[in-house]
Image (cartoon, rainbow, N blue to C red; front, top):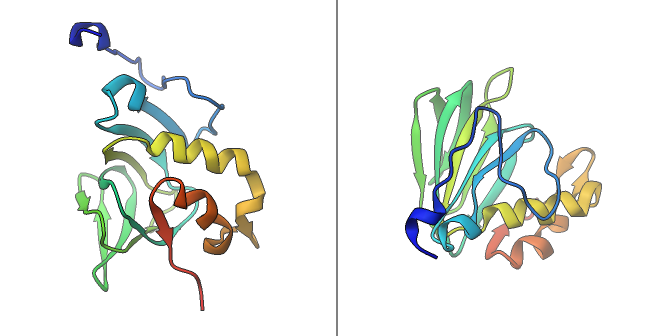
Length: 155
């Protein structure tokens, strides 16, 4: 497909369609089908803390649009207010936390792409990936493994 045929212009609040409907906390702006697999771009409201995990294939970029994001990286926790950018390289464990109320809203880019497919898989799994309302690494890891992601299990 010629590059000019891949042009996308989304109105405010709009999202790309996917395999399954995503909750309002997730809006896919560009997915692998749009970018030839090179990247995925999502607008995410961090409704739940994301436990410590490692991406084994993709680099993750996060730009904070609103609120404050807590970023745990390399043994340190960083406070990331609106306007902050973080590059989370593949192979390095990290976690993301809600550090404001309302929760932070971010742009999340993964390269190569595919993050939207992982989110769709989690949404399809529903509450089965939760324990006491929180994401449970033991329950997420079978799904995450298909996307080259591994969550550290609680001890």
